[in-house]
Length: 212
Image 1 (tube, rainbow, N blue to C red):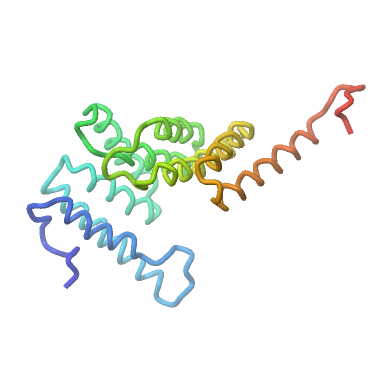
Image 2: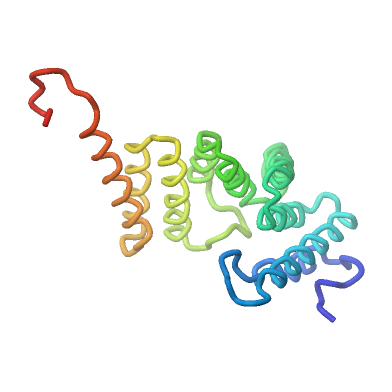
């Protein structure tokens, strides 16, 4: 039997969360067209959510379980309920003043805001996460990796919010941290192209030497 299908969370909630996370991260991609992958993905996400729920029932204050449950819900398409769970985790972590370890709560909540079409709210959380020192257990132990990863998602949120100059600065900062990152370089090119096209199309007063 799968260890994540154990009837209870056991004495160690983090070990149980680890088993549930394995289920979550081994789910086939939503874009996969292989026969059987859609049902396999649904099964993995359901079992992961059930496993995280069992941990929460035994350990109601386990932030890792709450964040894991929210991730499973979001992957299954339940963005609004996932956002509500992540908001509760983020508020609890903020109120605890560092006593509660939930290093990725703000980032995951920002993902949910972005998925729901609220890039401005996402930007504020991504920027706060960029300024905060990485806590124990956060994703990406290498500071350069963390900076580059946050720059990618911050740049995307700023782009979707129509703030192209800010998106360019965020992506350029990420490239300074990780110069070999092709995704950052590509996204920066997209932002520069979009910003340039918008600038060319912007009406200019007669006699403006920059007008075409």
